[in-house]
Amino acid sequence: MKKILHADCDCFYAAVEMRDRPELRDIPIAVGGRPEGRGVIATCNYPARTFGIHSAMSSAQALRLCPQLTLIKPDFDRYREVSAQIMAIFKELTEQVEPLSLDEAYLDISDVERFKGSGTWMAQWLKKEVLRRTGITVSTGVAPNKFLAKIASDWRKPDGLFVITPEQVDAFVAELGVDKLPGVGPATAQRLKQLDITTCTELSRCALPMLLDRFGKFGQRLYELSRGIDHREIKVHRERKSISAENTFDRDLTPAQVIEQELSTMVDKLTARIDRHGNPASSKIFVKLRFNDFTTTTLESSAMLPSIANFAELFERAWQRGQRPVRLVGVGIRLRDSEDSRQLGLFSTAPDEASSVPEYQ
Image (cartoon, rainbow, N blue to C red; front, side):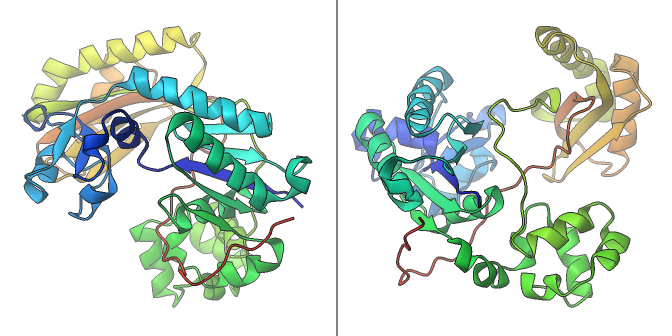
């Protein structure tokens, strides 16, 4: 039986800013770009979230929701420095660490003998040490696999600790809505609802052949997740799945303006990044568009090489999906022989404030 710990720093960029400037702790702040430059919020603290502000929101909208919001320019060098300190603490517990970003990681603690092998005690130690040495709070979750550990770390944010023991898995998963499963977006959730499936309990009653017929390869994933199954191992060295470059424009652009004024520069930037990574073989090229109504679409092709002409053709085809002015464009390549790039997302789940933290031995 595996024992996986997921650690996720609370509003990391904002937490670093509040640590270094204590006067920011109790006021709404956000880290992101300037509104006049079509900036986007990277993260915000919890006082700001009470106004409905969240990551990926435009800075202009955030300021409309909260005029008194303090907007801070990102300092990624400082964030990377703090991240390195935190990751080093993780590795004091185990070398089996899979970083997901600057502020979160999976740890395989199955064979750790410290703390009498207790996952609960390990999570408590990790939280205490990160706070003591860096001033950053971390929410942690412990569970038998990565899927459940990530849910658990989000269960009692901020500064949370939640444990799902092997004996609790079936009951815990049974209560989850299917819209909480990674990869189940609004469209898939609606298709499941049309089948009278809204909970994992209902989904687990479905036969695998039916799910494969209705949802293709993703049907296998639905079948497993609805039963709390996730066989993915910790990857100490993560495989890069794509290389890309994107730009949010200062003003909305027409398709002609994108192709004539922006695309060449973006492809040059992408080419330079591909060169820095040793020119790995690609299996597909793709473009990403965000229209002025904030809808986003991505289109890819396995029959094209990463040239300006091919990206222009793919862009024009993708633009037909929305046929609106464009505020963001990305270009990139999918790398050959990489695994499915679908990543498990964070979950918003309602905690049971009265429940206690069980001991996970």
